[in-house]
Amino acid sequence: MRRLCGEERGFALVLALAVTVVFSMTVITVIESATSNSRSSDQSKGRVSAYSLAEAGINNAASILSKSNSFDSHLLHPQGSYQLADCASPPPNPSSATPLGDTCSPYTWDYDGGTTTMWGWLDSATQDWHITSIGQVRNAFASTPTTRTLTATVHVRTAPAQENYVTAWNYVFLRDTTPGICNMTLQNSATVNISLYIEGNLCFENTSAVAENDVADDVPQDVNLEVRGRIVWNNGSSKGVGDTVISSPANGAVTTAKIGGGCATSLTGATHTCATPGDYFYVQAGGYSTTAPAIASPVLTDTDFTNYYNSAYIRPGDPCDNPGPDGGNRLANSTFDNDTIPLNGAGGNGSAATFNLTPTSSYTCRATDSSGRVLGELDWDNSSKILTIRGTIYIDGSLTITQAGVYRGVNSFGNHPSGDLSGYDGIGGQAVIYASGGLTMSNTAQMCGWNTLADAAAKTSGNCDFSLWTPNTSMLMLVTHKSGAGAVTLSQSAQFQGAIYAVGDVSTANSVEVHGPMLTNSITIANSVKLRPLPFLTDLPVGAPGNPNTSGIPDAPSYGSG
Image 1 (cartoon, rainbow, N blue to C red):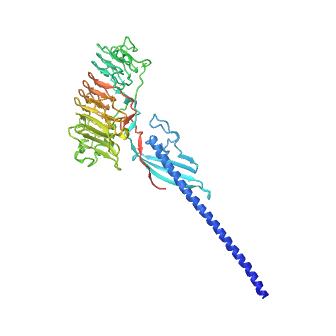
Image 2: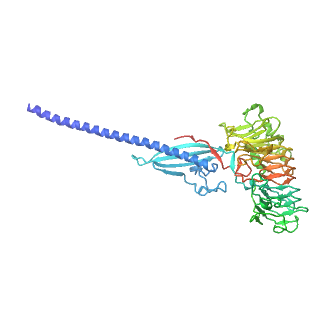
Image 3: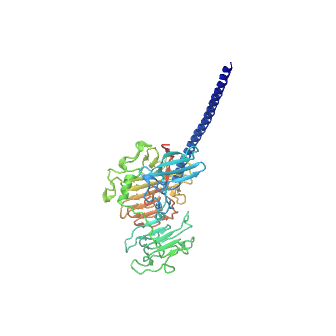
């Protein structure tokens, strides 16, 4: 019995030890499980936080693209093999923009929960930004942080209006520098109330004048005159700069007059400093200068026209969508060219037939991208006499306007929202039409702009109304390749609101009205012609000669890996 009891006492010790071990293991298991769960939870939270930080980087990139020049390839600090050689000090783009500074390192942002690193590179051929963003948070259970990497693509659509960086588009600008001639002659009673830039000489005849008139102009604007050559008063001239008949401003004095070559009574005689009373020369106080700095003007070559022949939204080789919004009235492909070679007609002016923007029958033409967004639009409704426009268009021939019409635009969805007063996304009409030939407007023909503040035509009593036109949100620009005299001919009483670029010369008949800038070699101004004073143009339609594309509309990010 004693032996049995002793054996039982030993068994109890073993049992107690076993229980202790089991209990200890249970405790360790519980602790380990809790620790593992905590680690797993922390890692899961870390991955979620890192993902959120990476996503914030993509959103930041989209914000940067929407507020800056989204066509500047330095903008998102490309890295690796995409890093640009001049990343340490990239040139401003455009030249007047604020420099970006050093773009060699990626963007980084520090947040309470961690850090975001982002960079991207631009594929200029597709206008796609490829963006990489890394979110990083501290890992409490490891020496390396928790990270998530996201990639996304943001397509940038070119805005229908671009910020104006070309000073010349605020003038009637004459490029002709032929020496010893009147590069611009104002004849008879022609009075010009518009800013003029003349590379050569300005000649006055009869009672012609350049004057500022706050009373006659519905929207008073400064008149700035710049003549790089000389001002000449030909025999019989009785006026000139200013007009004493005008009371506001006094004597019709222009705001500024920069006359590089002085004033004279002949093209070959001695010149002198311009001054009254010897000269008919009225300029507001402090506005006269004997220095006339050159203003750069875009000069289009055959290569430039060929480039637009191949890249315009509506163009030969890639014309209107087929069938488009109205297949029955769709413009034929031959409208834009009758072959596949630009500028190969007589005189290098294209081989397609002259295209009438305002015929007696309606037509439609629309070009869309792969996602169905409208890039180009050219429609004429003969009932309403409305020309609907958007984007860049190329016609390998000449243009004519024969009826009285107005133009307006559509947004990227192809709509003109009724009552929309924003002028946003081209609804006022923003387009550039390039023509290999010239331009003719028939007697009494009109092409008036749109008033985006009222969503109505800029017309009063059947005439183009300068005071109603909103040129920063409604601008049709016609660009012609034809050279020489009569390249652009505006016949009697024609009216045009928009912009004209002519390689050759512009000729205006009696009573013509032009509201808007003109860049031309030379211009002939007849009796009673009205060139209305320009507001400062802050925006131009995409494709305007010389103006860079700096305004893009980023689409929503399309996410890839991550």
